[in-house]
Image (cartoon, rainbow, N blue to C red):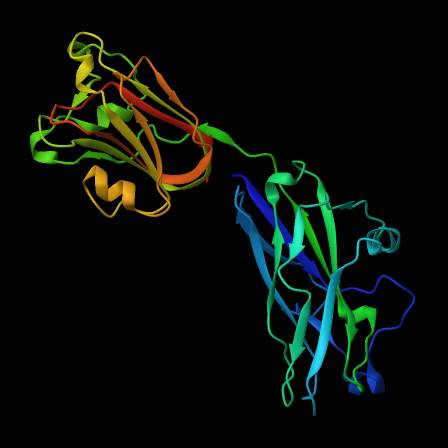
Length: 313
């Protein structure tokens, strides 16, 4: 399975002492969420072509008597210091692969926590299987009486994007027709057999009707569907599957008509006026779970095979 592994560590990477004993009474500021110890926290996310976001903020141990303005920043100069202290070889994140949605936060009067912002990671810009270190620190705080100590005011994200697993996403998955009672063997449309001769038992047909469709549920959202191939029938009737759409969505389709699906937000669409080929090749390169092949006519829809290839969830 292709994943992004994100770990956060609070750890000292300088000669400064830990805040313990009498020093613990100091109102130190730190990045939250907080691990509570130096143990690694792992968060596993599916590789995505869309940005990954991680909520963070700042906090202190005692309420303030006035608002405090806090500035946070990514400080890549700390990567080499961390590597030297921990005997690691983490890389610096590529420029443009990360950002903070906001760098100015506020801890309100009588509160201990600031508003939140998001750390945004563009995983598509990362080299596969390279481990990166991203230090996020409190750069400044306006209020007096708050201790700014880098030992607790810096949070380290260890980020790795493993090589995606490219696989056949559609074979054997649940498939169905718009009108199941008047249609034939929808599973033939994704049985792994592209034979287009009806007599050989791998072609399926919807039966006549307005805007007939065949649909497959991939079972989970693929972070990126690279290709969709459609194989038409060969022994006859190839014009039945013409003037058709291919729709792709990460959520279930909410309508059954072409117009309703075209109007649904977030749905990818591909239209072809000519009969489907052997195969017709589509290159969506988008996330998706549901794929629908739909006629715009009243003719019976025929299909030998639809194959989706992309990143395995």
